Length: 369
Image (cartoon, rainbow, N blue to C red; front, side):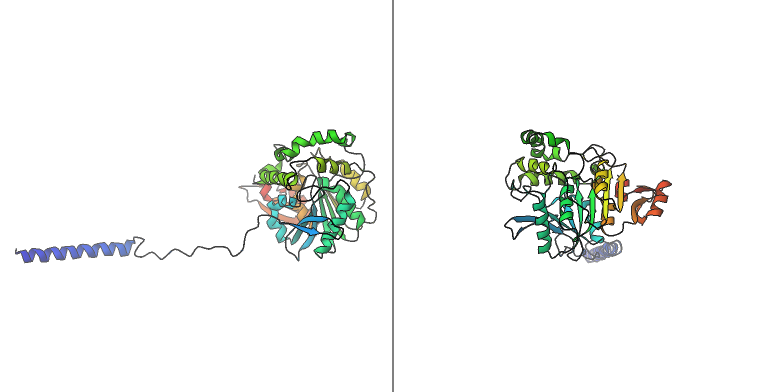
């Protein structure tokens, strides 16, 4: 064969090979020839919340109130009064059920107390001053009637406010709330110096102040402990007060005042919540509230809770505050792997399922941990 023939044969062979490769690419794909471009990445139009924003309001009396306001402005307003040693941002500790709160249309407003967080300490103020400030903040926000929920050491302040403005309180929810009635707390026998010594190390280390037992349900909430520690650090250090125990001692002294305010003028429905394992505000303290509020609409006690009932059963408290107190939050058919699904059932139906062991109290978020 001539050189020309060899060249022609080689060209044919190369052409055939090229067609074979191209065919394979077109049929099998290489990611470069046939694949469509990746979809456009999505970036949100709005920021995600990092928790409630603390705002300052100069009041007519000259004091500056610090408060947070979270939720839809048109939602049902709720004054959230946290326990002792909490700031205006304490409601953030309940954000593990924020989606439920938003779905129920609840708006949480929290007013900071004397000497905590951003609020300057004034040893001359008492619970009545807090009630005055809280009402002034509500006026500023153009909120006339509102629900009150008080946790632990927020109880005496809730009582003061309810006695001062019973016509503005549409419902009162007291969760493991210390009553300003009945026997005084044991620390009332201590001197100010001894009380300061007792709390100093705890407020310097939020991990101690916010310590929960190892079996506490809050241990199953992602990020709860760290959120609590941040809250403790804010409460006692925000203004550079370096864990000064004076505001804490002052507040605990206010808890010793007897008698508590007269609540006979309060017509709003009252809800009491207690944990049977609570040693800080024991279950028998509910009786002190009941003596002052004999017409309490609901008294809910829970065997699975201690001084964490306000968190473990926050789902039920939310439902009650939204006006559905005839219903019970349950996890139907148990937890993980058993088709568990959270339901908010009419109380009789919920009781039937609970009695048969086909449901547990609260959201399935608890049952699955």
